[in-house]
Every structure is written in C-alpha cells, then in structure tokens.
Image (cartoon, rainbow, N blue to C red):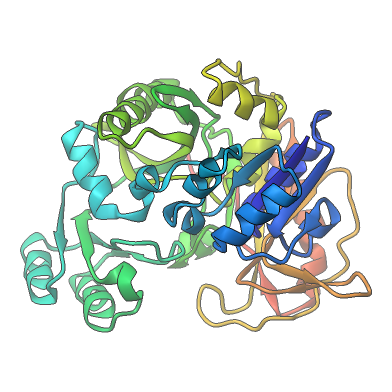
Length: 418
C-alpha cells in the first residue's frame, strides 16, 4: 500500500513514523515533508495547500490512501478534490472543516446542539467589541474568527490587554481576513485537556486524553504558542470527565454535523477544560492536534492504516493503548513565538533508544546536517513506565541544546501540577 501524508510539521512526522510500523504500508510520501521526515519517507516538493498538484501526484503514483495533517488544506477543500477523483483520503470535507475554520460557526453550532462551552459574542465593529469588554471586565478571551496558525487567541488578564487585542485584530488587521471578525468569550478557569476521536458520521472512537503546555516559558509564563510540549495520559483527569466529554461533547458534535449536512469523517479534536460544572469546549479542531499527536500516537497499539480503513468502513477499530506515559518537549528557535532566525544548524541528533525525535521545522543539507526552518523546530519524546522516567530520558537527551543560545525549551513539561 502506498500512502501520502499531506503536511510538513511534527504532527505529520509522527503520522509517518506510525505508518512505517504497518506491515501493509510499502511506500510513504510526504508533501512537502521536512528534514526529519525525509529520513522516513519520500518528500515531494508540493505545498500542502496546492490542491490540484496533490491530486495529480496521488493519481500519478497510484496512492492508496492520503492522510491530511494541517487545517489550511482541509478548510480549502482538499478532501473534496480527492474524493471527486475517487481517491481515498482521510480528513473532513470543506463543509465539515468549518468547525475549526470559523470560531463563530463553532460557537453558534455548540449553542444549537447544547454542547457545553463558554458564553460569547461575535463582533466586526471594534467600538462595539470594546464596549462589550468594558461591560464584561477581565479576564476575558479574544479570538480571531478564522485560522491564525494557533496565534489568534488572546487570554487577556486585564481590560487593557483585551482592548489592545481588539485593536490588533479589527483595526490593525494583524491576522488579515482571519481576524476581520472576533469572538469574545468568557474566561473559563480550570485545567485544559485535549481529546481526539476518529469519527465517521455518527461513529466516534475516542483516543487517550493528552494535555499540552501552551505558554512559551517554564511555570506557564510568557506568550501563548502553538504548544511547547505535551503528555499523555493525563494524571488526575477523572474518567467521569472523559466519559462526559465523549457522551456530551464529541458524540453530539458528530451527530449535529451530520444533521447540518456537514457529515464528519476524520479526526475531531476537542480542546476542553475541566470546570466546576464539568468539561466545556474551548475549541474544536478538524484534525490531529500538534504537539499532542506526538504523545498520543506512540501509545496506540493498532496499525494506523487499519484503524482508518475500519473507521471509514463503519467498523469499530477496537483501539488498544499501551500502558505507559508518553511525554514530548518542544525545542523552539530563540525568539519564538515572535521573530526568530532560520537556517541555524542543529546539534548532532544521533539515535537513542530511550527517546524519539520528531521534526517540525527542520531542513536537511546535502551533507546530512539538520538546520532550523521554523519556530518550533523539533520535539523530543519518550515512552516509559512512569512520567519521571520519561522526563529523565528527555532532559538527558536535550542537554545537547544547552551549548547554544539559538534554541530554547521548557524544563517542566509533563510535571503535573495536581
């Protein structure tokens, strides 16, 4: 079986590594892939949203399955284009991917189907948005309606911060079209967790929960990022909360999407928070989350391609999970999530049987050396019997980055604050 993975980040690298474990997969292509992925798959220089080129490549190479990693090609309709040519593809249609593509749609959808989430209002007018903020007070959350690469959310702890965020998005046009409408919602206090599920129509098969660390620096300080590390399972997360999330959030979402004529096939990601009233939705994503996928997939015992075939054929994939703890720590370019330098050479990344290295923003020179191409450069993960053992192995391996000022990583990933 030949498989194409669309995307070029850490999420796609762990998908490629998971596919490599399958006895049924003979060849893997990644478009566009990255430096690290090139060691595990054939990278093809096609952008992840160059839909016509991706379809033509899949036809030419007679690809058996295509798995879509990132959100932008999904919201642009890549799976619709593949299905129009009778090509097998795993991911939601453009109509279904709106659950991530528009926060305003997602909030109205949750309200319609009684899915627990924060109270909110949507604005296109900056003055109206500001008077709402003054009325509600801080803390309060400001979100760009569209896709902003994980950076379009401001958790404002002061009123001034919230007003600045509105100016930034609606007046300063920081996120372009994505920020031309903002969703302002109540601040929810509690511990966040991510719950993914394989979904086809009304069938929902949940994965193990994970938790990621969003702030740039230790002790959850500094600006919000796309994620500086993650761990799974989540110690202290009560099974009843997970059950509630499946029964009252993920299943009603799948059912509701079908009712809306937006039948969902793919991975549905619930970004959730434990509140005093039970779990509520912070956001939905229409794909595997990054970096949580890098700690969830290593725990999956099943063959990933078999899971996808079963789910899309209406069969229960009988998901099985390893006993153990997976933790992953992100190495980022100095300056991230702000401005940073690219093409900085990485220290030697020799293989180590106690850790796995997942590349996110890397390129590879002709001599085989890796260099940085993005803000989040790579993730070092470990799967062990205890969180302490996983942390020990990760931070031992990461010492090689301590000799340089060009990169940074958090020293407290996976240390539970229970």
